[in-house]
Each structure stands twice: as C-alpha cells, then as structure tokens.
Amino acid sequence: MSVNGVTSGAANAYDVYTANQTAAKTAEETNSKGNASDEKDNGVVYEPSKETSKDTVTKTYTQNTNLVNKMKADAEAHAKQLQSIVEKLMSQQGDTFNKANGIWSVLASGNLKVDAATQAQAQKDIAEDGYWGVEQTSDRIIDFANALTGGDPSKIEEMREAFKKGYKQAEETWGGKLPDISQRTYDAVMEKFDKMAEEAGMTVTN
Image 1 (tube, rainbow, N blue to C red):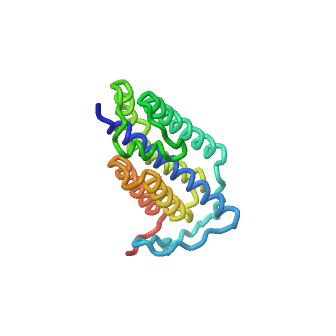
Image 2: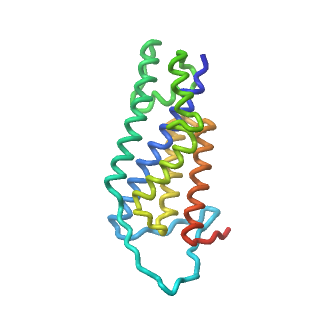
C-alpha cells in the first residue's frame, strides 16, 4: 500500500505547524521591541506607495490573541492526531523511533506500510478541499499572520520571512526537500502575501 498519502499529509502538517510556531515567536519578539527590524533584500522588495489620501487616518493594529491561541491549538490538535496515527502504524510494525523528530524521518524514508483505512483518511485530508490541502493550509497561514499582526500591512514582510524560516526548519527536520504538496502550499502562501502587499498599496521592485 502506498505511503504517499500519509507522507504528504505529515509533511504539510509539520510544515504549517512549524511555520505557525515560528511566525508567532517572530511576532511576539517584534512586539516586545516596539518596532520591526529591516529585512535584508531577498530578491523582491516591497515598498510603500508614495500616494497618500487627503483623509489619512492613523490606524491602530492590535494582535488578536484569542484567535492566535485558537488557531495554534487547532493546528496542534490536528498535527497530534496525524502523529498518533503514524505512531500506531509504526508500533504495529515493531519500529522504534525518537518521538521528537524520528517520526518525520521515518515517514520521509517511505518505508512505512499503510493500511487502506489510514491511506483513505490521509488522501481525504490532503485533497483540494481537505484540512491539510493546499488551499485550506495556505489560508490558515495567512489568517494566522493577520491575527498575529492585527492586520498591520507594515508587518507583511516580517510574516513572510517568519513563514520562510518555519518552512526551512520543517525541511531540516524532514531531512530534505518536502513533498510536492508542501512545496505547492509554500507557493500559494507566497502568492497570498504578494496579494496582501498589493492590496496594502505596496509596489514591487526587483
């Protein structure tokens, strides 16, 4: 039985969970300092548009702590559910592993035998309309970033860098390049950050 469904679901689960945790830490550190540090040029730089409105109103952006905590708890619960399924399969096969990181490397190796019911659930979860599918996962990451910053457009690039850092950490734990679904989720998140920047009146310069 193919392990692709569980592997892809696990990769995307770890990807979004790690990215969320990293983004949360980054936002909290930034808020404690009072202002964000400048990000180094990474190929594309977003600059605020020089156009101003006559009726400019100063906005106050406040972190939606309740939503942040709810989303973190939700992501953690789903990640633990997936991990529990994999642990059960591995135990049945007599494998031993380090619960902190070993489970991901075993999944990445593709050596885990998956029963039909588990594979069906995994495929459902990573489908286009599934919880770990590209669209829902990328939407949750963007919603999470907005909740952390209170929708402050000046923090868009910080959230982008936090997500990229989380994704890189997920790759390191996974032991290499993440499955296709995680890579497509990464691309979707980048596009949605681009859209946020454009809607905030920020222009793109190479």
